[in-house]
Image (cartoon, rainbow over all chains, first blue to last red):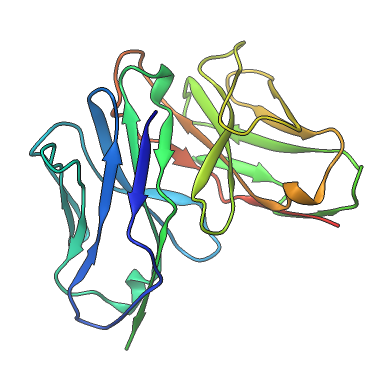
Length: 114
Length: 116
């Protein structure tokens, strides 16, 4: 079956540091890959996505590249801010499954200090 | 345009009590989902509804029932609550198209449930 594995957290950084959160996946077909972010006390919201190999998703300074050869979709940001403190979830959706069901990683807590 | 709304936001139950979590979306989406979120386990799918009138089990359906009341509303019922059902519950919706995989899911703010 499908699975998503994220780097274990929590991750604690100083403001303006470089961020990488690793994500690898297992899927039998041709998945789309997503990063969702959850701010304290809120639901999840889509941060970025990529739908085929070598696509790069980007939003709000975050980037992730769909690497089929390494089955990875690592999240990066060059300079984090305090406001980026949140929980980040990597997820996949496979075309062969019904109606866009998502498989999530366990989430990575990011805390950014001033 | 409120997106996905959930009620209640917080609930405390005693073991054996029942309750229904309500979810509604105003985006005219076909598909709706119920997840539970537990520390270190990400989100796990409880039930989903691909379209109005259909429901299917997800990864962790035991102890839950659902009703897709109409296109807008999708409720989750706990018939006899257990402490293991203490969790945060999220409803989501998407405009999923069969045979595709790129549709974004939109999430509600969650219901924090404690079962004593």
